[in-house]
Length: 552
Image (cartoon, rainbow, N blue to C red):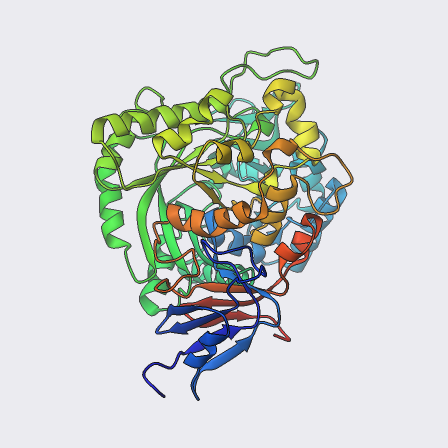
C-alpha cells in the first residue's frame, strides 16, 4: 500500500461540509478520504486518486455523508437497563401500559422486583396512574416503574408496604407523594419522593450495567450517534451510577463512542462535595471517556408543576395558584458553587426547564464570568421549555449554549392537555424558542434525554424543522421557532461537539476525526415533511464502521 493511499474513500454522494454549498448543489463536495482515523481530503472525483489496492471504497450512490451525530443530553445506561426489563415506552394507552406490565410479570416470575419504566403521563387521566391498577397485575411483588421523563415513579401497594410509606409519611423537601382524598398514597411519587421507594430497589450488578451500556451503544450507533454526554453520572433515584461501566469499557477499548460524563451534583449537599468531584474527575478519565462536567438539576418538569416558574401556575379554571414550582438548589448559593466549579475547570450542565430556573442559571453563569473572567468551559442549559423573552439574548452574550431537546417542541397530548392549560397563553408561547435563540446568536446543541424520548437524531431534526411530529394532522407548534434544516443538523453535530469539547469532531473537514454517518437519502433534496424518512446506512468512528445497515 502506497504511503499516500487512503484507508477509506466515500464517493459519489452529497457531503455536508461546514462552509460549502448545500449538499448536492453545483460545486459541492461529493467525496471524502480517510487515513489513520482522520479525514485527509474532501472534494470531488480527484479524491479517488487517493484510493489504493487496500482502500475500502464506498459508493454513496447519491446518499448524504455528514459528521457523526452527537447527543448532548442522554441517559444511555438507564435506557439500556429499561430495554432489558419492563419497557413501557411503546405503550400508548393506560390499557396497553397495564397489559405490558402484566405480560412482563408473567414472563419473569423469578424477578424479585418489577422494574423498568417509560410510561407516558398522557396515557392516564391527569397524568396520574393509581397503585390499584398495578396491584391487579402484580399483587405479590413490589413494582417500581419511573415514567418517561424519570421525574416520577408509579409503584404498587407491595412496594409502598415494603418501604413503610403510609399516609403519615411526610413529603420530602424536594418531592411529593400524591395522595387521595383520604390522604392515602396513590402510588405516584414525584421528584425526590421517588427515593422513598427507589432506595429499596435492588441495584443492578456491574455486569448488568456493562450489558446495558453495550446494548445502548449499539442502538445509538445504529442511529448515527458517535458521541454523547451522559447527563447523570452518579447515584440518582431510578438511575444507577454508570461510571464504573464506562471506565471499564473505556479501558478495554470496548467503548467505541466518545462519552462525556456529567457528574451528579447532590442537591442535598453544598460545596463540601467539590473535592469528591475532583477525585472522580481524575479517576474516571480513560480512553474515550472522561468526566469533567458537573450536572446541576435546578427544577422539575412542567407537567407536574415542579418546573420553577417566575409566575404561578394556573389551575384548571385558568386562575393563578400559589405554586411557582420547585428550586432544587438554593438560588442564593448557586452562583458560589458554579463559580468555584468553573475556576476548577469543570463545565456545568444545567437542567433548567422553567423560566425561573433558566434565569437562575443565566444569572449564575454571569456571576462566574464576572468572578473568573472568560472561561473555556462552555456551560450549557438543557431543556429550556419556558424561556422569558428578556432572557433569550443573554445566551449569546454570556456564551451559554442552548441544549435543545427538539422532540418536545410539538403538539401532542402531554403538551396540549397537561402543560398549555396550566401555563396560560402568553407563557405557552415562550416554549422551546429555538428560532429566537438562533436569531440572537446563541450556540445551539441538541440531544434527546433518552429514554425520556427517542434518541433518533433524524427524528429530532424533523421536529426542529417542522415543529410537528411526523404525520401529525394538527397545527404547527409555534412556527416562528422553526429552524432551517442546516441549522438543525449543525446543532446535532458541530453544536453538540462544541458542548462536548470534542473540537476535532462535528465537521467533515481535513484533519478532523473521521466520525461520520451516511444516510440512505439526502434530506436536503426533499420536502421538510419527509426528513424523518431518512435512515442511517453506515456509522464510522475514526474511519472504522461501528454500524452497517443490512443491504448497505
